Image (tube, rainbow, N blue to C red; front, side):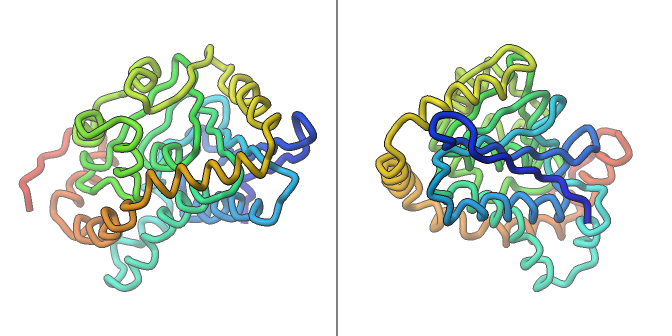
Length: 268
């Protein structure tokens, strides 16, 4: 099994910063099921780590992530799964985003190039996002006949409000520039091209200088208040996705994407 994730620890003030490097080596950092599992394991590896108080998640120089890998054999096998198997497989993404949101450490995303679909879902599960000025985001799920899942809709709602969340999700082909993402509240800091990691490290150092226990307790309090109703609001994510995957529009959306042609949706 290829290793897509590398972890560095002991960086910054008092060695309190860790970096999780995610690089599939495919140029676009697509989220295959295997990559989802490795990134989930990476987040969980900090559960008993009292020495680390900040974790930076960085993609490669060209991309944070292009989202779920529609060409991956295991991912494509979803098309022939029974509903029970499909529901179990669809929990990989929510499990990933939950692991990053729930980690005790402050999590900071360093975004270069592009951040698309599942990449956005992962980014909004973090505490802070630093984005290069020439990077962009896009949420293409609806354009593929799917719904935006992984509990990302309530997370986006907390950051941007209802109208901007609808704009980002419903206008699936629209690129969200770094400036727009910053103005909308989707990212907290902008960096010069190629400097997102550097800027994330500056932010991480500021956090690492604070008392770790107070930081962890504050994160937990804010998250519990902000996300109190999220499980209630989005427990149907997986089932909506499973339902959407059975539609003709989904098959058309994926076929159009792979065939590089405009889709023709019929509402069925």
